[in-house]
Amino acid sequence: MDFDNLKQHISKRVSFTEEELHEFCQSFKLVKVKKRQFVVQPEFVPRYRFYVVQGSFRAYVIGDEGQEHTIQFAIDDWWITDYNSYLLQQPASMFIMALEDSTLLQIDYETEQALKQRRHVFETYFRILAEATAAHMARRVITNLTKTAEQRYDTFMERYPQIGSKVPQYALASYLGMTTEYLSRLRNKKTIPKKLI
Image (tube, rainbow, N blue to C red; front, side, top):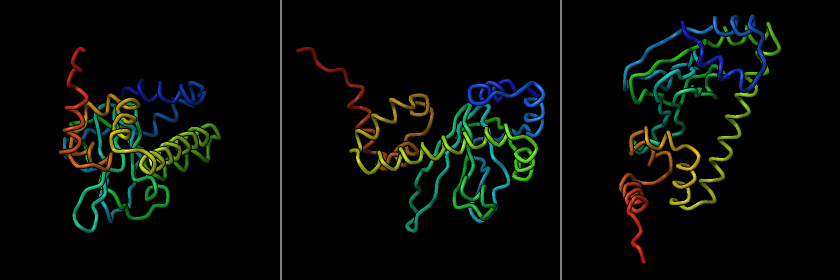
């Protein structure tokens, strides 16, 4: 099994010895999922945390009126799960669906807990992941509360251009809190060349 992507991801954040890297990686299972396949669904306790080797995913909830609200995306070299439910081992509130045929490395909750107990460096790595996720969610809430729809779009495309070009327009519109029609107009406006004066 090829763990090169995960090893590079780890080495940017924490220093593992070769022995630690090997032990850590051996705790994962390679999984291939098809486009539109769910890896997390509401009412089921999420057993796994997923590292995306290749592919793209969308995490979303459905409101009382049936409207979908995108919570998170994940593409190559990102992690995804229903974090609240996974960490507390409670039934999930989100759907997480593959947006294309994808390859994942998954670790189950019990194995992750055992890793953290065995070596402090593993606990440090997962803490760093948790802090990054918390910071991202806080930034998103602040952006949604303080920016216009156009500013939210500009900020997202500046920060995550690879996601903006990879995910379906309806999913991006849902994430940014706007209609698909408005996002389409916004994108057209951004791509029309300005006339020379």
